[in-house]
Length: 510
Image 1: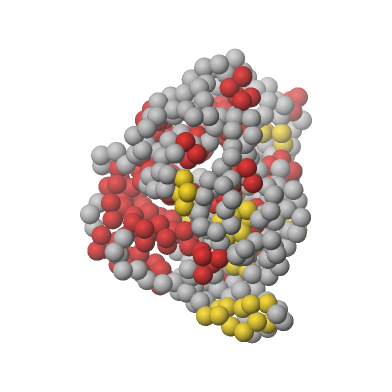
Image 2: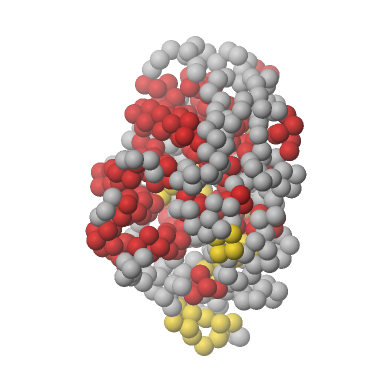
């Protein structure tokens, strides 16, 4: 059920053929394609695929962008001096950081999308309109991700002139754009998403039927709900509520919430039929033996190598004991010397042991590093071995659950807190989780989001957009309590990018 395949070009543009009629694999030598002569739908699709595969690379959502949201949060920690230690310690500088590849690759994705959006040589058709719409959604999400990491929150009221450069033209190696304001970048993002939403398919189709590896109207709506919850200008909360509600209440039949008894298999089950292309998923990255060669996902760089306990050499990211214990649970006697527990919340489930009566859940306390005090828990959300081999499980980026929780947050922001609490508790119960009193409703909502999306890169961004302090409890050695709106909430631009573009200013304080 794998979908499309790609090759690299020397221009940092990933080119591929995804035939407009049957999407069959057909690789062209790079020398046969003239970047200045995109005159067929087939070639236009190549650049769209380039956008998809670039945002799916290890520098972006294939690994780094997903991991960063956890590494920078208060719920996770890095064990030992391993991957992302600099980021976890918030010791990043212009010359020492884990985000230079993220910045560069997102602009590579934007470049490929621009080539699709700006094309006038290919005759207009329904298929061309669909490609341009998907390109606009990818471009908007790329700019939104850049703002999330390299600019201050729009509600912070500080340094709003430090947005990111807006580049809308075709590839030009000579341009040296300055930063736009945060407001200007948000305006561009919203414009792209509205246009993309109008032209994208309601139910994206691949060679085997509905396919969640392509952007859809629901993907655009979900990003818009994120954008409006983050920007929070006048009327934005109502718009966030509108778009999240449209997904929750009016989605096509291929989008629907996952059932409790299928939740664990959705992430960690095999074969792939219960995990990939599911109704819960709004957009996922296509991982397969060919695409992984281009995206860089493999034994050294992949989410399973960071999160899963079976990756003994590079496993690095655990969730804190406080977070692990925050799920309802009952401790059981040790089995073969290993502590056990059972939880009705499917997002934690049972700790993984060899006891036949205690099937594995989504968190594991086996083979914990002895240097950690207290020891936390691994997650099984990213299985290493799949039916196709290692590292081929599609990565879920947008899920139906986010639309549900974004709707709840927007209800609260629009003064409908009673309904928000009712829906929040219904959501928690649907997972087997604990209910809330609503005494601090925003904190309750963000707590439930943390439980739902751990390992999926959202916690840090939730803290940042709400202008909350970052307070790390255990397993922290430096920058353990960071005030809201501190410079450390904004990643520095790498020195290489500054050297290349003298008009690009570093964020204040670095």
